[in-house]
Amino acid sequence: MEANFLTAVFLPLALFIIMLGMGLTLTLEDFKRVVIYPKAVVIGLVAQLIMLPIVGFGIASVFPLNPQLA
Image (cartoon, rainbow, N blue to C red; front, side):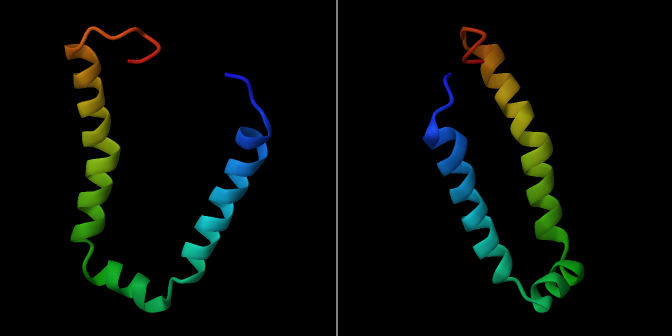
């Protein structure tokens, strides 16, 4: 895949602006809520970091995909 202006400059800049905007809306209360009720954060992290790769590997193993797609 050839890098062009869109993939090399615009998309990282757009992601930076979106993440900065989301980060600036956080308050101290948001972090206190995570410490008091960590169950949702733990479930989300386990689902994203453990379950998602397992499901992806399972799908790639079940279907006869090219290595580039798998």
